Image 1 (cartoon, helix red, strand yellow):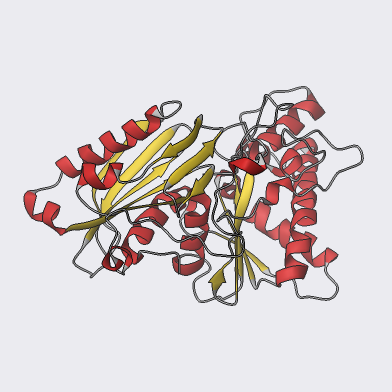
Image 2: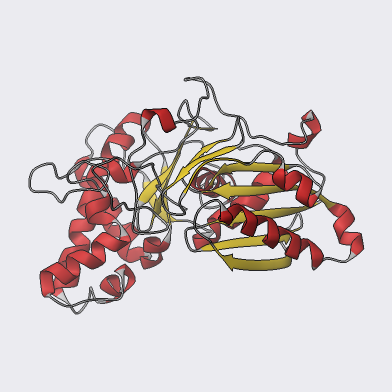
Amino acid sequence: MGTDQPQMPAAESVSGTRAAEADRAYPDDRPTTRQGSAAQPTAVLGTAADTAALPDDALVLGLDVGGTTIKGEVTDAEGTALAVGAVATPRGPAAFDAMGELGERLLAQLPEADRRRLRRAAVVLPGIVDTARSVAVFSSNVGWRDVHVGDRFSKLWGMPTLIEHDVAVAGWAEWRYGAGQGYENVCVVILGTGISGTLSVGGRLVRSGYGQVGEYGHVPVRRVGGLPCPCGNTGCVETVASGAAIARAYTRRTGRRIGGAARVFALMSTDPDAAAVVEDAVDALADGLVGIVHAACPELIVLGGGVAGAGAALTEPLHRALSDRLRLVPAPRVVLGEFGARAGLAGAALFARRGALT
């Protein structure tokens, strides 16, 4: 899942949560949902019952589409997986053929009695997703543009199929059913190769007028002396605090290549260079989030994505950094997400079962 925007002419290389690339959207690439209105999920078979919550005896199919892997599961109301599968993500519109084939394969694994219990599917996609028109508008990570999903999966799998943005679903799942459960004001931050997330205020998921979620990674925090960001700006949070940025910073500082951000965190207690790189990343992330905290006053910040695997080595210093910056509002608690790397897939199943991100 991740931050994945259409390409500006000057930025041939891009960075996102699932891959090392992201772009800025052309205004014309944004979905045509009316500004100020909430995009509604498309259940392509078209009746009100298609987006109603399902009974407990129903099974659902969920697919989480990533830049490298498409993962799928058939689950029951308890979240138990009855069929599980994954395939590599092809480039371009061919990815949609792979989604359809994976879904068929999962359905074929089920006995006939379970097939009859399947009531709905959900496919969560990276990039810009127009749920109202059922269009995958753009993904730089996978390489598609303006793919009309329509009823292709509903016809292929024989059940209503919803589509949504992967980070929106992952953040909603963490808020409603994971680490943020029971809180009305929650900021979920997905930290990977890129950085994005969701914000829930007053018990409602906040969405832009065209249905997108928070591009926290593209808040500029180092305008002077910062690194260029492929989005076209300078010193974005993502250039310092993303997983890829942390690994690159360590290599720049030491001249030694390292196997990802997790390794940098693991070295913190014995390697002053690793500790300094992590401190810089936490400072940048706190600077990027402090405006959101002032504006929305979340009670809780939930961290997900690969970088969140650092655990307390990330949550504790981030809480301290936020506390140091805040004077007028209380510092929110900072916790790890409960679904971890499965947030997108677990969220797809919950979305299919609930019928809406409510």
